[in-house]
Image (tube, rainbow, N blue to C red; front, side, top):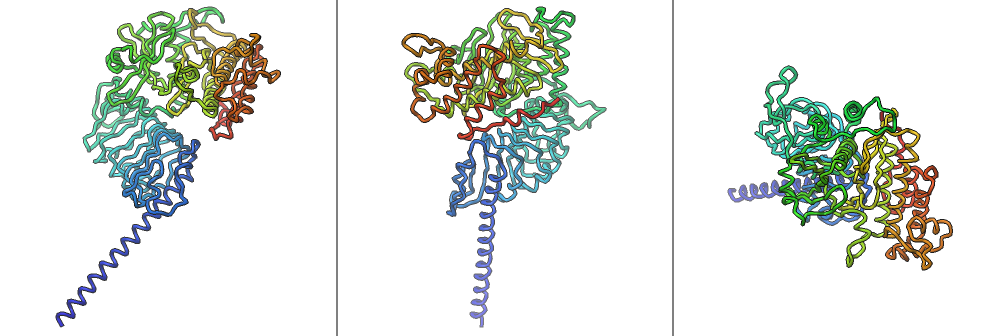
Length: 611
């Protein structure tokens, strides 16, 4: 009897164990299927203009662990389709926050940084990512208020929301996130007090920099009449730490139009009142602002970050010659290396009054304008008679050096890449001319002023000769060479300045096609410049192969090259009024680039300008 009971008990134990294992296996299978559906839904919800997901996330596979080889996906175990980390940074993704992440039930780390995602953070965010420990949404276009429900994500160790367009106050209950070790919200439009975190984390100034009215914590003390006294005061200032934060995440930075409009209006009033004599006649030369007046420097600090000379000196190894990456009339460009390994580009301007005015021009231009095809300006420094501008480092240098490398180096630019560069520069100029809140003319477009990031996305630089105009008719010109600032007749705007940019862009197109600055295309010497050669080819199609970069000939691109060549011919037309607008130029090049899947936002540029 005793033996029978023991056998019965043993059978019951094994039955329960089997039942537990069966249920566990069922739950695991369900979780795995859930994670696959999670990634499928995320892929379907996001626009993938560069094809990172489309080329890697192939679901036509049923083997265990197949999703673990997807780009940006880490699994708990390589042979199990269960997502641990999802890192989709720097992919150019567009869309809103994908609620499908709720189906990645074992997700611990989520990184959507450096994309162009927009909209608000979902109000049920804590339900979507309840067990996530790291959430990075930095450098996107997210807007609206940070939802209070994010304070229920109690496992968060890292929360990065910087470089977006968030508004309103920080949820007070953020202070209750007891595990939080890193929190950044710099470069937003936030107001009100900084939470006093129970975790003991305080942060630094760069964690909250460039928000209009944040206070407390490491920032300036809050006004006791407006905010609760539970937030600690601090001394306000700028630190090089901001450079680290900005350099790491400043690829898609954008700001709120309403806030920027206010800054613009204040700045224009300041320029008109303090920099120009409002009683002078149009076209009369005026005094351009200097940087010796503390009030003027203070105005610049409101637009862009002021940086420490000592830190920049250290980052460039005392501006050692080995760190020189470019030299020009206005100054020398150095590569700077921060302690965390990030790179910056520091432009050290020559000690001349004319270059002092150029630094003001570049500061006022780039500090107000943010676009994917403009070089990101990170800060400036004016100490010890030094005049320094600090930019994000562009790892592929300038277009001129790529097209005309040092002897012995191979050409690296294939035709589709050249087309992508042409489209990017055209898009940037079209935005400056037609879409920017100010009408802007560059006046110095050439292959050396086109910088290339690691993806060969072009960035327009060298804004020292920029012309800006508001839409009320007031125009002012920043100096070129030894000129002073002057007002410009509106009738001269198109013919003298806008169409000059179009012409200069045409020359850049020719360099992309020929790989040369000047060209001799015939033994008789009849055509010894790019412009003369293009006019000859455009009219007769003769001599086409004589001038084309030999690396492009016979590669199957002749028809496309001829199309772009004709666009360039229109751009360099001898009569300015016959040249097309940059919007037309961008549309024409984009049409050629359609077959390569190069993203085009021509429709967006046609939308009414915000006012």
